[in-house]
Length: 195
Image (cartoon, rainbow, N blue to C red; front, side, top):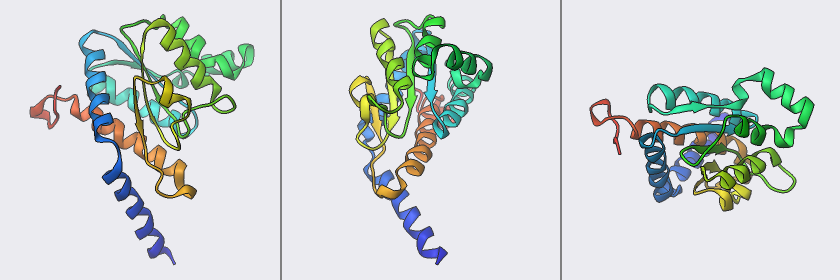
């Protein structure tokens, strides 16, 4: 029966929309507006489907949001060379180091689980490096937030409404949040909030 599944799935999406932390979303918009105002750069990090969302966000934050934005996963040659030579665990932190990440910049992590001692260690290492150099850490994650919840200046937690669909809901909401934020950064005449 397809229709009951369609109804359930969309009801779950609606429940997330009703329960997601709107104060965290507001803080995320304000944090990104501050990065733009001080001329900082934004570095988008993600793995798998989240990497695809990071790449999409680079376009939107640059073109619409007016923030200089990059994603290491957009450079396959460097990503695979670093993975081969240094290991996947340090690939993002080393990339941020070479990019001369500093206190004017922000790292924006998109992840289902937020990283831990055993999963997405490359994201955790990048967030730890960002904290050491004074860059802001922003994230959109799900589950319990993982390491990102404790390492982020602003963490938007996508509520778990159906345990068997954590990943699809987390990744679809990364895109929703990205679009919400970048449109909030637009001037009012373009339909945005222009903080």
